[in-house]
Length: 270
Length: 335
Image 1 (cartoon, each protein chain N blue to C red):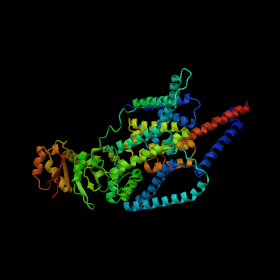
Image 2: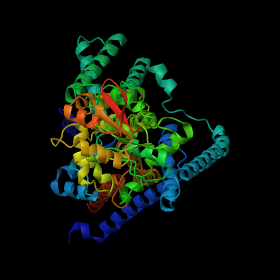
Image 3: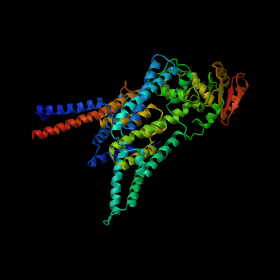
Image 4: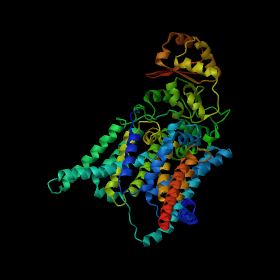
């Protein structure tokens, strides 16, 4: 996502507020300017960033700027000016404008400012980085369908080895699903949430279940899954169709085909 | 001797500053009886978080189970509710004697400007449905949903790794463990039976969005007192700004629509704007409440969050203003 120009609009609005006299809320205007200067100057910006633990990026300190309060205030002030100008233009011949015409001019000013906001914004309705929800519980239908097939009782836990797309939603779907390969393996930035180190062999296991690895070790990995007590194995249909995996699954006695959906195949300990 | 070192100037400046400080202090200790319903709701949400934090810390440090923590939370909430009702009952009698002036009541605004009200309200409803019910949640760098499910399934508070479900060996950083929002969500799920996904990804962001609009409605009333049309226009522009402002990962709009369940969203869109408004109005008691609420929901610098900066900058500006006015007055007197 990019293309936002609201910061420029903010600065323009702030400048306008310093030019318009009398301005009622001077303290607010002073605060906005002072905070903008504190954020823009490298030294103060750095100090603010260090203050906020230094862990977050510099962009995070920009939430201190009251953009959402100041911009609409500026827009309402511009709306007032525009309405006056429009009214003056329409009532040029010494006659005042009718009430209906005045309402129309006010609406036109709102529309003009909305277009300005629209052009400076994202030009989209938001939510461009997430898909439409098609499942019942705000989980994608593909993943929800496969997770629903797992036999999870209220008092027991099940251990699951699955591709990244399923892992992403598995523990949101149920806290009773245990994952030898959690989201922290596919998203290393999540390691900041715990001190737990991820074993090196887990990355290899993840590559195997996703079908992104090169080594032909399916037999070994199936033995390993059994040794760590994995109750369920889920493979994407494309991965399951691979010959090397098919042969390994046929050659082992631990897991049997349990269920399948449109996108995934589930194996389970008998 | 420079004029700013003259005795008369220093005396004048000191007395002005002292008067301002005294005013601020008096404001801080004064019981705020003028809070409207919006303020009560905003500050009520912060108090709710404070009570949750108390129960959460009790369970965390005394190694209590999650259900004990949730029960304590329920007791605290009930006690708070009873206290508020009793307070309302006793103070309500006094209030009846004086004529209450309703400020910007919804019905009054609806009667005066139905189109603007419908447009703004319609857009807010659209935002709620579109963002919180029609799209899958945005999960990048977040494990709130997993943490809530983990607490419900394991009956422990941060004893189990939310990403795997196995018991922690090394544990979790204390800076994250002291934050209470996941525990609060899990407790609500436990008592209401609402699925964790629905609560975390639909209901909570919706409430935060509405609280945020409440905060900005206070701005509208402050900027344009007794000008209903401008207040409504201000709100319409806030709604549009949110709708079209998700262009960066740290914009208010992005926080609300993509991470509304996180403490960072509550801070950016409720706590900080409200703290700024209260600082500007000189309601320091509310500012302290904001600072405490911030500590409960996001990782701060040993308890010093952004609220402290906001209040510090406003105080500094007020101090400078007082100093400059004193200087101006001294200059006039010397002339």
